[in-house]
Length: 381
Image (cartoon, rainbow, N blue to C red):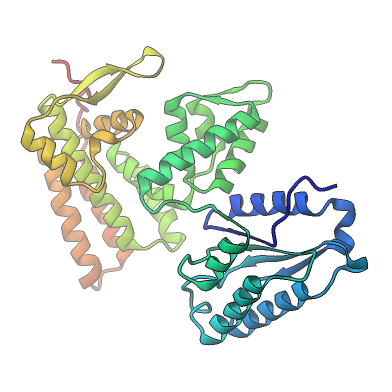
């Protein structure tokens, strides 16, 4: 007996490949018990690198859903890991569009009795006839990482909460924020890093910041954040080491300097906030003191709310504290010098014959070689 009331077609898509794979497995498990899969499940690989491969995959899928199961029973066709149902190079081909449109028409007409199609895809464009046919005939499940960073961060936090609960682990809000910042938003990475923490902790269930440092691995995206953090902490040797690792991984020098310029802009804002006492001590998680934004003049309120892609005041309190502490490592004039140096280096990257790695290393040395005593990041006098 199967627990699911079956519909003719299931479309499971999105750029969060872990959740797509997880949901696909769940649907297949409910539709076809393990003991029936030899005769009741046919899998068609949908990943195609060329137009010919895509057209052939669709043809095999059509043939599969039109072929009756053994003894006339239920048959499930799984069209797996399809990567041409959106505006990709292969997906834009007229031959592929025509093949997919024919499959969509077949879905509209209806399959022979007992036939069920499950499609798992990297992405399925809602504008295409195939998506609309699946939505009209059956179930559509989408697992997409939001385009906006703050929404992606919020979704990753929700995922992390669920994964921690399943693993029986606990994290404070600050440690969760640090975990997301280091590991990134990808669900598969979150699950994998939590699994590593569970093994590392053994019987201990509360994850501390030191555990993250000891066990978790930074994503490629978070390594760029690590570079910016090393700059903010005035850690020249560490910044140079991270820079060399990123360049070895073929990260774009232009992208790296844009990240540094963004951090410098943030620290200029936080330095001004410290100097003008717009940041004040508040009670954070567990009653611990933390820094948070207080009242600001109307013109500053307008600048913060409209002059940034994300209002700095909406940043997680843990991150506000880190950025304030980094801003305290520089004077306002030093940050202005860093901004000018980064702008000059950016121009040099695109116009000079000097090797780009050398330009970036010289920039870090220029900005961080002077040592100064940090100012305490607090709003109290």
